[in-house]
Length: 325
Image (cartoon, rainbow, N blue to C red):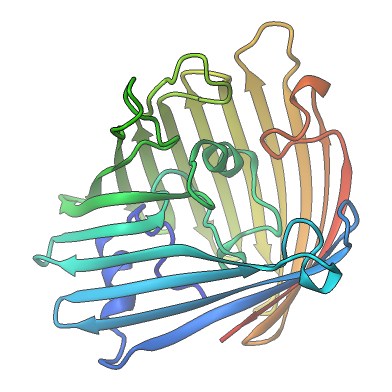
C-alpha cells in the first residue's frame, strides 16, 4: 500500500502528493493494513497493529483520515490491558493550481527520508534519523499539525509548513502555544536519483531535557536496475551532533528483496561515545496483499544513551507479516 501519505509532505513532489488522491473515485475509499510481528527482544513476543484509512475527493479537494489501532504497551487487550485506537492523520489537500497544493490538519512529519507505516518502510524497524524526529514530535507518532503549501519551482518542489511547535512549547505563562516552521526542497536531477533537503525550527525549551532544537536533514536515494542506494543525514542544535543512515537494497526478483543498513549517531555531550547499529533484512511477497520479512539488527552504544534514539546495545531478530487492503 504505497499510497500518498508519506513523505506526505515531503510533501511530495506535488504530483506525488495529489495524484494518488486525484485518482480516487468520488465515493469515499477505504484502505489500510495489518502488521503482525514477533520480536525476540520484547514481551509479549507476538503482537499486531492495524490502520484504516478513509479518503474522498470532490473537485480539487481531497480529505483523508487515518486511524491506527495498536495492542497496548502493557501487553495488549488479549493480555489483560487495553488496546489503543489513535488518530494518525486528518487533513485536506487542495490543488489550488496546477503548480500549488495546499494542505492542512494533522499529517506525517515532512522532514526526513523514512516513511511512517509498515507497508511503506524499507525495513521492519525505523532507523536512527526517524527515531530522533519521532522523539522530538510531541504528537502521537512522528506527526505534526498545521498548514503547508507545496509548489513546483523549476525542476524542484518546495514545501513550506507552519505547524505547532514540535515539542508543543508554550509561552512563559503557558497559555499560548508556539509554532515551528519547516522548509523542504525535493528534486530529481536525473532518472533514478531523488534528493531532499529539509529544515525545521523548534523552541529550545531551555531546561527541558530531550529538546534537539532546530533540525537539518539531507537525504538521497538512487535506483539503478535492481539496486537502490540510500543516505539520510541529520544535524541538530542540541543533544545530537549528527546522525547518519546508510543503506542498500537489491531486488532479487519481483517477489524477493534484500537490504542492509548501517547507522551512526554522534552525541553533542563530551565523553559520550558514538553509537552504531547494523541491520540485515529480507522480504518475500506471498501475494499482492501479503508479505513476510525477517530482520536482524545489532547495536553498540554508550550506556548513558541506551535506546533513546533506537540504537541500543542489543541483538534483535524480528519476523513480520504485512497484509494490505
